[in-house]
Length: 595
Image (cartoon, rainbow, N blue to C red; front, side):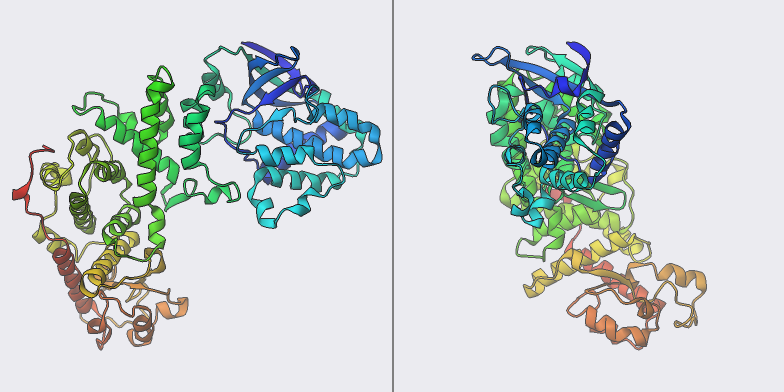
């Protein structure tokens, strides 16, 4: 390993190729990074400043057999900055070449290989290769940007960079050719140059990766999982599964979508990768001998994968792990999908229901075990086990039962270790789950559910699950998506003006209006003026927006008044509905696993 200070003219050298490895992420800089970049460049062009652009890591791969001077280096770190600089020089060529053809040689030496004159110095990987090459090879004077749709320009970051820099450089009236030549000599890097056989490039990359946009945890995992020898494996597995058509905005990819709300927010791929390593760890450690609390913490996700990947000696060792990861990723996408909250209930109400529970409550700690169920249990047992889990969470969350370990080693992960793969085994496991995680009894639920104060999200999720079951089982009909409904307090929190207080007292009322009996699912949110109006004023809109709902039907909407008595009555009614829909399990039929 050699470490040297290098100016840009030594890096963008026409006698060497810089190759972006296939497993590197695509180009990701947006206007925030580009604006800072241009500010730095302007200081070089107009101020004559020198500017340090951080470290880059290059690993020598091979030497061209026909031209011994034409060296090839893999860009382990630095592709975002080097790509931006190449596009910058292409924009400068577009600006200056039409006025002085003598400038062409200068820009050709920056952009193209000496020995392969139509080949850009940087060889991008599959993610950005076609569009990058098209930009660099585009003839000066050809309006390339006009050939792409606005959507395409917005969705592809390489094109967006070219469009942004083209516009900005046209406006730089004080940038002349002589000044711009300073960029080559006044910008410098610390180049970490590795020999072809050096194995520690990933370790060096992790310690130096501090410039521009940080790599995400999935990108770090991908870089650690694949190396140059694994290109075919990568294309058949990770790329085919996680990296989609680049015509789609990257943030809108299924795997890159941010899911959750409030303090629970992460990307689909992060949630899946976290769930998968927990599943694999607990399947291979049935006796729970590998004590590692960090395994159950999202912030240690990459380190946990790195430890596991470090045990693989070669591609053959890691191939089964990767193939199984892809199988589970497809299961996750098909069955455990946050997007189901935007879909109406369907004939697959069991799967829809568990997704509402997972992402509505939320209880994502159950995902590793659900992936296990979907892989190991029979279809009949799968349905029964999922219904049992929904029953468990509705009851516990409905009385605000606290758990200390849903997602830890003693929680649902222990069910994987114990191979709890049948309904009877799950009954046994839940019955033996411990005092902090016990299955609430009917009497306990009837007593506590009507009077507890749940979060709005918990209340909405329970009401939706009741509605989904009643429509599916009783009428054979479906209801709208979970996301379509708004939660409304029938008697508002600001009740003082329009809701006279008679036999009750203020403290009791303020408590009662927070109970589930006073909450309704509506298809449209009431406007601000109407929300705090009295019962008679609100009733027509409540009837309209709750039409067809079974948790707020004519029995309640035709009441002459809405008060504490009605709220308590409806809370009891909802408790009864929960216990009828999800009866207390018969633990006498339990199996012999999970203890």
